[in-house]
Image (cartoon, rainbow over all chains, first blue to last red; front, side):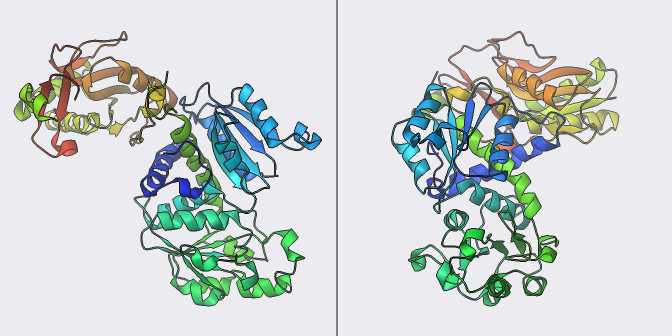
Length: 317
Length: 186
């Protein structure tokens, strides 16, 4: 595996399957009386969050703690960043504190890439979402969830069709998912109004459509993306009601889907907007499970990036 | 295996020898523990698991009881994790009754440095509190680095540090069953 996880492109098919297989074993830990493994004892994981997040940060924190790593939580609010400290200076501060891994979320696309490539730090860099670029661990947990239900937690996702619906243009979740699904052999189908599809969508490794009703009957899973509040006033669509009518997942649309089809949502959900409460709480919905799977998948990523020797030669002591 | 090492390889146990050794271990387990009450066999992947299953099968033949068999992956508890690239995890499966107040018998193919058993003891610690832990191995090749010994040994084989011991089992390796010692790294 590569040293860092900045993009879903950093994983080839074998590596992605290895992450999912590892996560499957680590998921069993949560059934034990002692939910902890000694594997990362003495390692320090810094959660470097320049943007607000609840589930991703908590998920990484839980994952790190279950592997016995020391966790330092850093949020931009109330730190030197609010006084204008640069990313480089913040990184070097972490370096001198002995961080072994930096889990970074940043509002600017490419911040994790800078951190990983500029030699400011030696630590492993894990992208926890950067701007409108990528969110690879979310894609891994989505793939894990889909594989668990539709492939009995074995192998890849060959032959599956997954619709990703909503604000593709601004969604790092969609981008990472499109890449990873393709890597695992599935076909992602992007569904959104033309204004919310990025320029160059035809060059993505998948299909796209403006018509949700046409896509739903053929897919094995549908991933609903959150419509971000700040986009609603930006004239990407006329009204929220119209968006909801054309691209929201409601009970009627759910009926047109295949029986085994899954409904995923990266959260937090706007109930009544992109997904109705009825669908969110239906038996096809695996939204709650995605959260639990997130911890297992992040444990797997931390273990695979930090658990072994980190030098290229495989010798390090 | 290279052609070179095959030349110096010798077979120390054949399929029938392995079967007889496991039969004896099964008898010894029953004798030592005065029957099969509270016994749980935990194989250490990969080759400890089929060995544990076969010992359980023998015990079933002798005593007509089914004793619980599981597997215990010790990867996350190894002390040499940071010396090598990360390893894929094997499957851990604890039998339904758990291990609390049970007599847990750890089963592995080769006892060498003793570090695997140490890791297994740590792993058990996180799963429960057995009344007793015993160790059964097919081969004891010596060179212990920790104060650990086996309770049941299929065969003691003195080796030099430079030799390697290769256990082949039908269920894992899919070929002729044997224990082979060869010179040099495997």
